[in-house]
Length: 164
Image 1 (cartoon, one colour):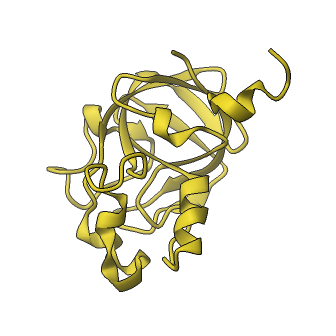
Image 2 (cartoon, one colour; image 1 turned 180 degrees about the horizontal axis):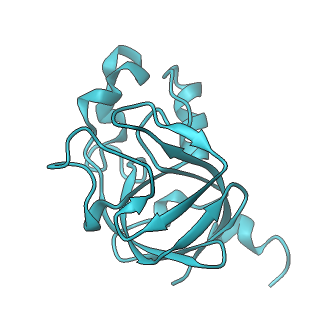
Image 3 (cartoon, helix red, strand yellow; image 1 turned 30 degrees about the vertical axis):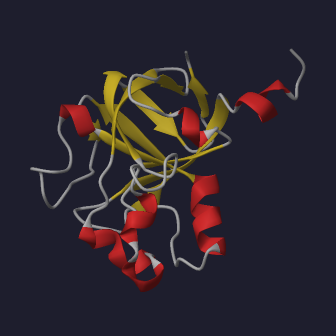
């Protein structure tokens, strides 16, 4: 496989941004973070019944999807949709429940589910159209939740690899 193989498979990328908040959105960027079984150390959610926990420890989204949404006229940006990790260079449609992903040299996670858009992200969509990122209506455009398999530290620029 040549150096252009990733351009067609999209199984390798990098960590563009790490996002934390004391609750709510947008989540704000940090350069590095420790990852525990419950997600990024220092990150908090306003509603723990629908966000967070072991099965929803991390929320991930695609930099390329954010850019495409911007071109559609949505005032979205990395961290605005509540994602903890903004990933670049991956074929986003490959991120489905059951996929295992390596982050840097220590951390591994498993995609557990697609997210359901929450009303808190409404300001970041033209006319509040949050259903634009609902998996059932727009397959391959949803954010995803993940559980943490191996803890460790991550930083901006770390490699990201879909393992299967």
